[in-house]
Length: 123
Image 1 (cartoon, rainbow, N blue to C red):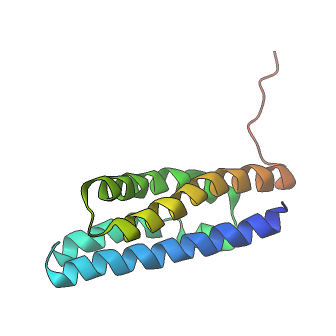
Image 2 (image 1 turned 135 degrees about the vertical axis):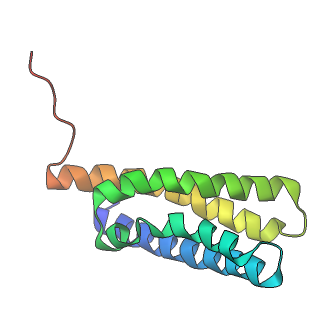
Image 3 (image 1 turned 90 degrees about the vertical axis):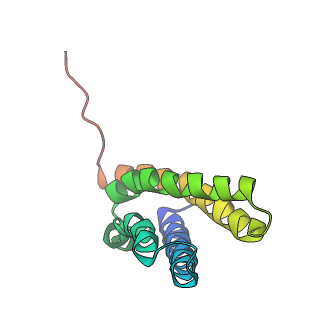
């Protein structure tokens, strides 16, 4: 798979995830299940890597994977504890799983194309 195709898939998946989670948490804030400020606090971390992901920066894809792990915990917990929101939780977990695989692969492939990487110690 080319890095361009992987970039487009990861970016589309990330934007879909942002819209999905923003809709979920804002809805929970409006309906009163969460306080609105608490709901907004859940949205802020997923927006931190937005600029770098849209621009295709491999370093952002690498550290963005760590932020996604927080939302994977949310999705897996929701999947386990509720039957009412099972479909939402399943979509969230599947999307996050795909991104947790795609982000590091894109970061690695694109980093190699750009000549980025860890420097090796010369002894």
